[in-house]
Every structure is written in structure tokens, then in C-alpha cells.
Length: 439
Ligand code: NAD
Figure 1 (spheres, protein in one colour):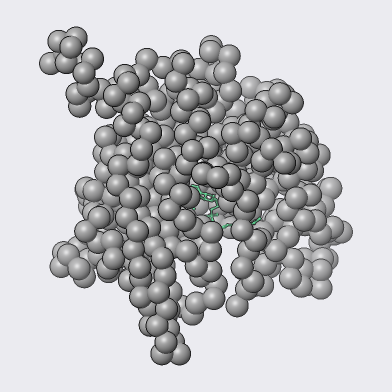
Figure 2: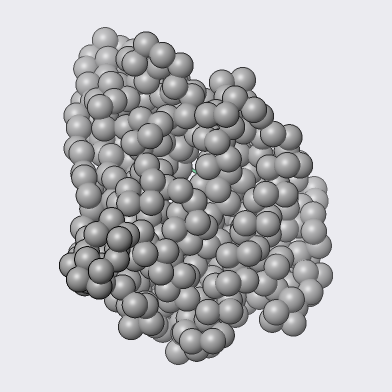
């Protein structure tokens, strides 16, 4: 059993902070009042209690959520998070980001998200399975392959997605693989989904870096969060010649100026659960000198690229002035607050926004959904080729909008997504749309 990670400090409302990004982009977008008003509010928010019989015979009741923020462009799509800090506000914000991410990538989905407030590391595997199935029992009428599709997020994984899909199938009495993505391969998962977010982030970093006149070999990287995404991205970057000098998890981090051996750390962590606990008494120490650092120190390291890949609200007005990295690639959802954005911009730091950088996961989730529905499965090479094409095309467009409009990359990404969302909302009918005689 592991200690609960410290809860991130939040602004009064995460959703209110998230939607300031909309306001920043609005002046550059021709969007109707009606469409804008619709995008300010989540379409549907469900809060459920999930009773779970624990192994010791007692009953625990967990609080769960599912939010469909907007489904104008297609069924809701978004992950399920198991974490002690999950609240309705957090889930609504994550669903908001999913709405813009799906529009930015031109996926035929709206935005959704779900979560359960708990520390999953305190449950046994059987308790976790009962909880996952109980969550589906509670939200089954709110989701579906054409309504709202689930996926993994923080502290959920392919095994949990398999249980959730199976429970939905039991309730509906028909095979429904497309209700959940990120499933095990044997239950209809897609090749490449487990590493898709990291692979996508790598494609974006590697495609945009030359625009800044940088080469991988001369680029140092620090990564906060060594989970599904952070660890896979660290390994990919290191394999491609980037010098990954620091990584961390909820317990703390490690630093080595000459670069870390990420493959060894991944194997070590898989065996030992945390980077720090027992780190320097184990074989990894034989690879070289490793300094232990705190997460706060990692965020302030003198590196070329900083990659927050843990949770939201990690770079705030309180520590944005400490950030030394010139480039920040947001792999986590919402790691930089809007106040921090302004400070970083004033200091000449470039922030590559979450809705672009971490969109590889939802893109391959879309591929999984397509494969489930067609019954035709693709090779890893096919998946990665399509992922690369789509992500690089949208990254290039976002870069071009930022250059043309002289706006931040985040505002550019929102302009691009808002244009698509606005058109879809208007096409469903607004006062202006009908007044102008559109048919
Ligand atoms: P994960 O649960 O596998 O890993 C999370 C990592 O963050 C772990 O290493 C954990 O120890 C660390 N962590 C937790 N609290 C921390 C803290 N206070 N300080 C530092 N580190 C901390 O989750 P993941 O799937 O890798 O997701 C990471 C981020 O990426 C999340 O913001 C998630 O929303 C986002 N994301 C994930 C996917 C996906 O496909 N999994 C897709 C898009 C975005």
C-alpha cells in the first residue's frame, strides 16, 4: 500500500480557469453568440455513489463522476481517472479540454471525462475490479458506443478498461467493444494504444524542434510524472538521442547531468513501484551518479525542454518565475494555469499546449473505435503512420496560426479547434444561421 500523493493546489474553479483559454481565442474567431454560450457549460454531468464490498466483508461507498461536455461533433470521448483529488470540477475541466482536443485533431467526437475519488493503490485487485464494474453499473445509461466512450487516464489502464467493457457488455447483453478504448488487445484493443500518447507527443516535439533551430543531441529534457505516458515518452526521447536528465513520480525524482538510462529505470520501477524508494541501493545506481530531487526542483531545472506529465496545476503563478526551460511541452492535461501562462509568455518561454501535445492517446482511441466498428484490425505500422500524419498536420497548422496571428501556441490551438466547433454548432442552427438564409 502506497501513501496518497499530495493533492495539487487548485484555483477556486478549474473549469473557470480552463475556459479563460476560450476567451483568449475568441477575438480571433468568427463564432456566433449562440455557439459560444453553448460552449461555456457542460452538457450533462452525472454524479454517482458506487458501493463496493471490500475483501474484509465491509462495504465502502465511492464517489464517481461522468461528464459529457459537448457532443456536437460526435459522441463524447474521454478517459476515466482514479485519484484522490477527483472532483466534479476537475472532471468537467477535463471534459472541456477533451472537447477542444477532439476538435483540434478533427476527430468525430465531442468531449467527455470520468473519474472516481480514491487512492486505487489502497485497494486489492479484486476490490479494484468490483469498483470498476460498479462504476459501469452506475453510469451504463449515460454511456455507449454512439453516446460516450471511455478510455484510460491517471491510475487506470488496459486491464481496468477490459473490466469496464465486459461489464457494459453484460448489462447490454450484446458485444459492445466500442464503448471503451484502451482495452487489452485480446478484447479488441488497438495496436499502439498503450504508447499512443507518448508516441504522439514525441512526433509533435520532433516535428516542431527543427523550427526552433534545435537538434535532439543538443537538447536536455526533464519529465515530471513517470507513468503510462511520461515513462514511455522518456524512453522514446532517449532512444532518439535527446538527453533526458531528470524524471520524477509522486514520491520524488532523480537527476543526472549526463543523462539517465531510462530503460533501466523503467525496469527498476516496474519491480519497485516508485523511483525513489530504495532507488540508490539497487542496480540502477551502478549506471552512474543520481541525485535525488523534489518535484518542485525538477520544474525549476536548467534544461531545454520541460515536460509536465503528471497532473494539472503544477506550474502556477507561485512557481512560473522559477521555470528555466525555454520550451514546455504539456503532456499532462492542464499542468500550466492561465496565470502561469502569462508569466511564462512574458519571460519568453514557449508553451506547447496539452490539447495538441497529448492528443496521440485520443487519436489512437479513435482508431480503436473505428477498428471495433468495422471489425478490421490494423498493424502497428498502420496505426503509427496514421497517427503521425494526423498529429503533424495539426501541429503544423497550429504553428502557422500562431505565427500568422502573433499569438501563443495555446491560443492558436484554441482558434483552430473553435473554428471547427463553431461551424458544427452553427450548422445545427443558430439565430444568425437561419437569419442569413442558410439551408
Ligand atoms: P499514470 O497514472 O500512469 O501516471 C501518472 C504519473 O504522475 C505517475 O508517475 C505518478 O507517480 C505521477 N504523479 C502523481 N502525482 C504526482 C505529483 N503530485 N507530482 C509528481 N508526479 C506525480 O497517468 P498517465 O496515464 O501517464 O497520465 C499522466 C497525464 O497525462 C495526466 O494528466 C493525464 O490526464 C494525461 N494524459 C494521459 C493520456 C493517456 O493516454 N494515458 C492521454 C492524454 C493525457
